[in-house]
Image 1 (cartoon, rainbow, N blue to C red):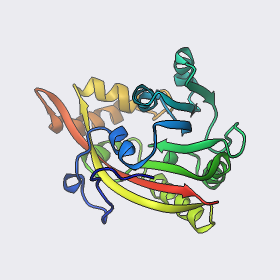
Image 2 (cartoon, rainbow, N blue to C red; image 1 turned 60 degrees about the vertical axis):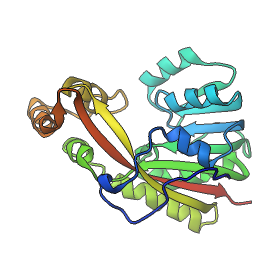
Image 3 (tube, rainbow, N blue to C red; image 1 turned 90 degrees about the vertical axis):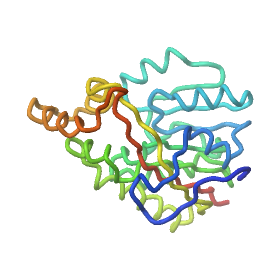
Image 4 (cartoon, rainbow, N blue to C red; image 1 turned 180 degrees about the horizontal axis):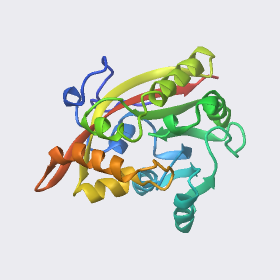
Length: 246
């Protein structure tokens, strides 16, 4: 593990405005981790934007990206390369051999693992990592103005703490040892409410059962944040960096 320049360290949960703004999470990862070479796995990759930028920076890195959303996977499979492979699977059942990867990451995806499967997912990550391999988990903090809007139709007040508790249990069971924790904020911008709705209300991986009445309620909560240049939010984030025990 490396720490080549200043990074935002852990402190008690605060409102997003009190957190340092980090422009690109890949920069934080580069500050913390040896990303330049090795075999890595991203669990719940979505569109794999960060993975593609990672490979553009580091020509000797190889990434296997897992995703359960069939719509997104169909798009991902059109962009397979010799260094970026996609697999339709979840973290609770990783179809890869043991001791295969140098590092694993979950970006805003651990809380999407079904609650009964979270402990199994932790065991699976430990299984496929080499001894000493790193596990980087980045989860949204349940706070901030954007969260107050999203919770109107997708309240993650239960699953967010459950994700942290699963990590705690994995450490207590000796699967991983903690390395460091970091909290920061990410800028989030929407050009207008239509852009917000497309990205946040109607994702391909979930049906939020948005009725006309709920849509109107969400639009009303969003409206005060809309300005001539769009709506600007900050999303508070909590990173936990772990290492697989030998």
